[in-house]
Length: 525
Ligand SMILES: Nc1ncnc2c1ncn2[C@@H]1O[C@H](COP(=O)(O)OP(=O)(O)OP(=O)(O)O)[C@@H](O)[C@H]1O
Ligand SMILES: [Mg+2]
Image 1 (cartoon, rainbow, N blue to C red):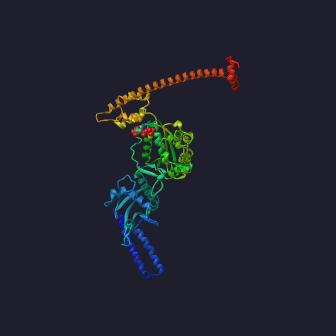
Image 2: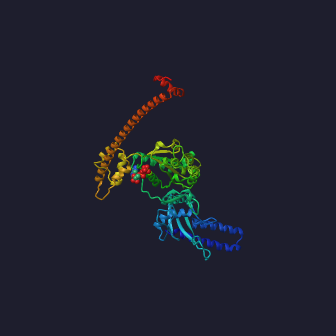
Image 3: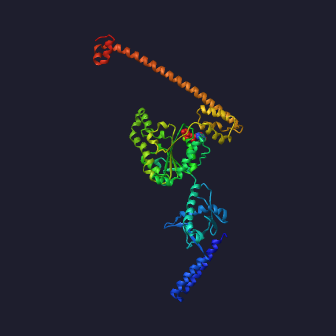
């Protein structure tokens, strides 16, 4: 059965040869008789060989570009080839998480089924026409995939099936794609041979939504939001909106903002572009960087409050100004610095919902901050940042996720104590996780839980002590200010009295108010 397509193909060739021989007798037959015979032969061929074949050559076009269809078919057939074919070829595919991709060798055949219809796939090699030396031997070795199916299935297989193969092939490539973490290069390194605006490494962060400790309802809501977005191509096209979504993650340090971004990327299979704004010179550079990001990616700007301040000017600039006050020499370079500090809030906003949105493909943009209240409302208004996600201190539900991850336990008698303690005290998931992690092999789950309880209690005591100290400091400061104010008043009174004594009328002339006071105090001019 395996070679069925092959056998039929040979039979087809035989018939074609016979037809050719018929044609050789061309001259001996009158024209009308000849076309009659030919039309009957065609019917006979189609009756004896009711199969259709489609070829997909590896290289196409004038410049012999590797055909996308060929690559997609190869990927699509990879799993079938590895389980059915006896002679296989292994190739390393660039940027793939799979060590090698297996494909069937020449003259092998695999079968596939689509809506109950059977098809045969084979790969063939066209031998090179010349034996001459070539710089591109791989290109000389032309191959093609051959699809064979019964003519009665023509309509479905030519349209729907081929479409399905190509789409699935591309989807598998995306799934197997090694994801990348890209970091923007400083612009002074942009010029030159083969330089790029982004450097990348393989993204291998293990965070996932399963390991992320947070309220399960909130987590589910975020996952659903991501699914809706990633499947929303038609929806976004319908409502006339660019296929983009903005998230603002805010919360104290160590509450899992960066882990959340990694989990999102892992969940959606997206690349991450970690955009460091402080090395971007101006809005033009920002645009150039963003235009080079690829589809299916998350663009991250961490600690947005540190990159831009409320007026849209760079924070760095403000700090420079402070330094300049102390150091006049640095003032000399001010003009230069100014021109290098021009990434503005409006530039960023224009990019988020301006023209950049027109470049197709799905992109998510995530801002993180520890201080949401510091951000400009223009930056975080709905529509720009579609979803605001608060990453908060560790609650009991989040703790249970961490306990499962770190200690592999779902319940324990100490859980209720921890529940109570976490309810009353703020502790970040990062701190909880740190305490739950066994430091040696002797530390079992109970020891770690006790360690956590101790840590929360200590943190509580420290927090109470700190609060007391702060209250005391505040009271002392207020008292000091009060005393200083009183001393200041006394000084003013004394100096006033002295002035009046020394200057007499002049003071009254100069200062009406003072004159009134002087008059009231009984010292007349
Ligand atoms: N919600 C969480 N779930 C699971 N692990 C967490 C969570 N929050 C923090 N952690 C742990 O703490 C470490 C630090 O967390 P992360 O870097 O995500 O915090 P962050 O909110 O981005 O902090 P920062 O504001 O300082 O950037 C992580 O490596 C992770 O192990
Ligand atoms: Mg972070």
